[in-house]
Length: 374
Image (cartoon, rainbow, N blue to C red):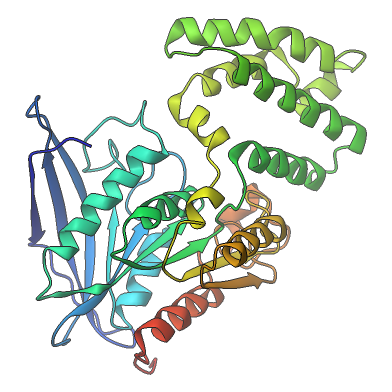
């Protein structure tokens, strides 16, 4: 990561509230970096919530979004999970930073070719800011909270930054991206009631797609998409053999989906995601870890991934707390099935069960009971 200097503007928009256990304020946050050689400036913009009336150093939680282009609230289907988390924690004595992803909202930068490691660099810049302000923020109590892919980002940063005091994950993976996609697809298609034989065909096709990607020397751009589409078409034809048109559509073994896979696999993000194993980075962490999963999470299956996280922590002497919550989905909502199309119809994301687990863990590390909720 090349840069000459950075500056921060954190002020202006102050909004106080007394509706929670403790009042807090919102501050507009901008972190600008100037890259060496080009003098190009990248801006990371977000919101910093600060507890009011706190004397001395404040503990900090940096929120890290999941995959895709996310704004600072991680807004999805009418829900704003990161706003909920930030306000809950700041009402209990924590400074919380949530930022727009690069190229999203008020943040600049290039998203199309960014990978998980680029997002980790962005988080490190945020970490560096708090370390440079020890009079206001406690440099020994800076925590990372990652949701979904954000959990991978948090593990990468904490694996080599000893300043991180702890990492909390919601819906975080413990296995590589290929395994995550296979687990996810099996769960979602079975949830839809698709026949086992058809689900197996889709999974077999996916495994072959991954194998092809491992053997090709891939660049990026239109030519790469064309090359992948050409390589994938025979595989789709093979696995769709003898299926009806309806069955092909049911499990996505169509020419349209084939081209969609080619488009996705041509991106640097996806190729990084497929091979990135968060266990490699969790193993190097020397701070406590909290892993929260919901038993109805169909995007990152809790039982398999929490078990993998627990195993790697045990083998590498990483202090670890595992929390599996009943009837909780990938957004941390209380749910019926866990299906993605259910998210919009459900209550608060994340539910208070998730928030209470998070603050209980943070408080145990800080030895500070939070104010009583009114």
